Length: 155
Image 1 (tube, helix red, strand yellow):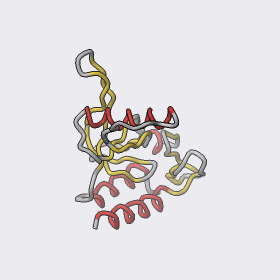
Image 2: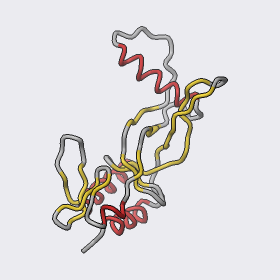
Image 3: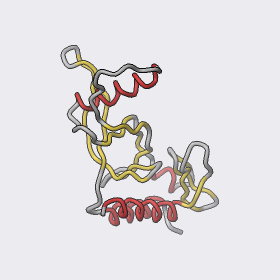
């Protein structure tokens, strides 16, 4: 039986040299205000973010940008623009993709028969819930497909 940890370790090996995206954390100070600062990089594989040492569950994804002087018809558009500006203030470059709110997946718990984040052992097969509304699919097939898509976009 192939474990989730073995599949994820192989995925990291297969991703060597592929482009990564920024991992950010929210910070706030009296002097610098609210911002999102870079705390690392990861390969983005849909519901998963992989670093050399951790598997993470994807949450909010945004692109750092200057909000400019615009009129917003919806408060949600204003809030998204402010989040993009917080990433810019935190040191991300204009247009950089930033992942915020991610969480560490306990891969050992999955290997032991449990679940963590989008990963679970389903009938003895490491599986991933690829969307909040979607069902589970085998992790091995999911990783193969996502890695291939990432490499196609890297060319």
